[in-house]
Image 1 (tube, rainbow, N blue to C red):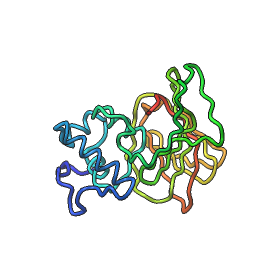
Image 2: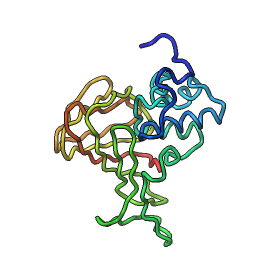
Image 3: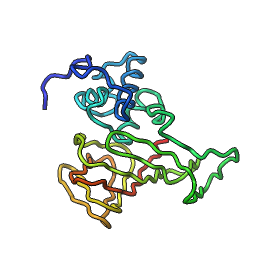
Length: 211
């Protein structure tokens, strides 16, 4: 672990380019952080993340998971959706108000989708004002950088549909294959990584809702 925090400068690679999904997210984190007059250290402290990791995310070197991004968004007083291009989401918005106690999503419904680095998140349900679960279909491409283990409020469940996934919980790695699942209190430090050469598809359910 580096003993000195990274510089506020973007480094040899320059600021994050908004031509890639990771670049879009990183550039917007940097922009919103600067608008609030926060240093990397200040944002890292508020979001519960490391300075080095946030620096890499801002430069588009590392991607950030939705739950960690949720903490960053809260610290910057923004919604998670603010960090993505409008073109990455395609909500099937209806004028009719949603019922408070349930939603119904058909297979043909165009649902919201977000791309962050190696991971593509497809929301599996519409917004329900009294519902707390966030169900998602997640496609995790191989490669990329491993994120730091991270804890946050709520619970997390992941079920592997295809491919394999390394899921680290409290420093212990568990290899998940199709049909395997993990369910944990999200305050426990955890992270996931696809170390294979093919895409892994997972059904993930987290609390609280991110959007």
